[in-house]
Image 1 (tube, helix red, strand yellow):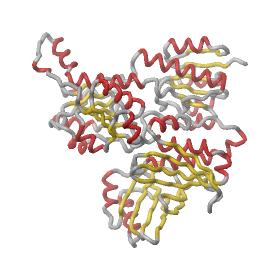
Image 2 (tube, helix red, strand yellow):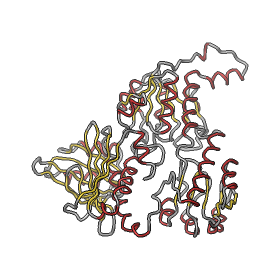
Image 3 (cartoon, helix red, strand yellow):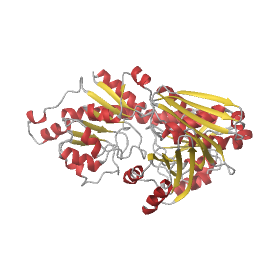
Image 4 (cartoon, helix red, strand yellow):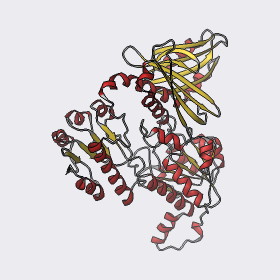
Length: 529
């Protein structure tokens, strides 16, 4: 076996470096702090690159990476890697999605306990020579209700630890079944119910268009006046201006934040002036154990792939056999787009995601197509990155069954159909590659349609009446929103229509409310594909 060369271009725990140094057939180069120019000048000599958050793997870097086969990120986020560029070059991008989970969960609980017992305030008081025992009377957390938004790896760890502290745990997660939640000792509820019942609320959800400013003025109105809020997930989920108002006006009792919409937080930020707000500088993953764990994990993953072809925690689609890659790729794109589309529709307490392939799609292999659809569906609901390799495990953790079906061709030569079923209903969408290989939607919720699945999209249901389309177009035009395509599916027996509008920008809440107020319009969804 010929030697492989691995470059580590960021600081990495010694335990991870030791794995690389001791691995047979691996030549390690440790050069943290490189500029983009320096990295470009040497990256062509390496088979593997291991980074943390400082190194930027830009298209320029990828272009110079003539022999690079894997990029390993010691941590969860891969925002500093141009994944499309790496994928086009056949470079596998890996991360360590669970390495920080325990550390982040523990930090959230530490913030909660500190907030409930006013520990930082008491410490600060004593440092000034005071003994203000009565001023810092706290609250017990035992037998109180903890509301968890997001039941991914971190949220589930928080739930487990909280139950050990005798807390009653309720949770919100659009892709976890109530049966699976019950197995974990969690009562699955709707968001409004969680807000009204929770004594303490902690967030462990991803930042998406759907979760941005999820905790806003309206949410604070529903919460208990004595509620405490913790966010150690992503900045932007909590509307920080609304939080400052809620605390100042006494709508909630306090908050602890480890993440912010803009980091570092401005020194004059209004939250920093509030005594009952605790702030930490994004310390969720900052423990020596976590840093060592992710360093060892990513080193072992990179060596495993370079020497034995083992792919673990890849965030892009792994390399396919050359003879089928070009034929299969369009169906993977269709499947992911279908899953993404359904993942942004109304949640239905999902129990099963079924992928049915006909024609060539079925002949090439249902499994990779099904996993691409599942990854597309889950990516809107998980804090951690998800990919076709990790998606089945994430689904299993949430009690979601992945079903794969191969059928004879229907009216199209080949199709991929994704059907999601749950206690509250069913969603189904069918797609096929277009003439240029682009993902096209040919069926949605029982309606025949022919639309392109890309960019910002409006999906609208309405009665089939004259003037509806014109009213929608007029409203969009008045807001400066361009419509590139519009396709309609009809149910003539019921007099119902479903329209898909491809627009050039995402609509805000006010515009959506105006659309929903148009006569004969029954529902409007905005999503991004």
